Length: 304
Image: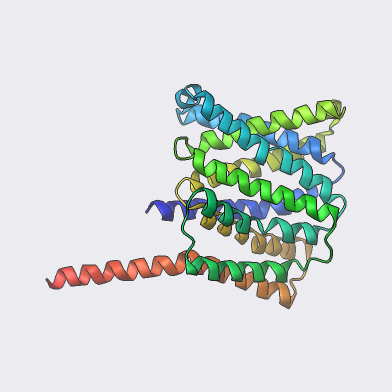
């Protein structure tokens, strides 16, 4: 039941992510990506603090040990600041296709770190699903080159996978809401320090009304993402949780088709099908087996 709850929350994360990717493609236009990222993180941190107060988790936040605070700071550094700076800088120098392919390899690195540091057992079924996911990702994003920008995006992706691993460990003692808050609060603090050191902090006060509106909309999506992701990750192995997020890609594509008239090629359509089949292999197939076993046991018990 706990794993099912985790999958449901991660499925919501993928849905939110699919809409967020579509919206952010408009939101970042004409804005300093570093300023945009800082404001999103800071707004979401404020929202999460409000949720923590609403859920009556503030005593847990207030009683965090130095070790736990250090964990949250590391999560903010590895997941909420450095990779964002690397990713958005590199995105200006490469194509969205290359960036998309490399970013969607996150589940591979997450699975590797989960196996090495969290001792998660990687089943043969997951390996088969991972191959389907990689094939689907390749069909969606046929990478055309690999240089410095692509290397920076790959480093950012690996850092996000490392942060997810550290977060999964922290979730053994902390709630998903508190871990999400730590990521956004410390992440925004580190990005603000970067902006101050690079003399960009004053641009925060030069945003137009339209840019502020996009920040608020993107913050709403990001709030939904981090709240469902970290609360779902608490109930699900990391290697499976990271895989579910690839469902965001078909959602973004369908939104682009519906609102922008961007056609989906046969190759991309096949890639979507492979990703959906892989996630079903990971979760749906297992749930069907569980239900059949439960029904079999019930029938056997009734006969006895």
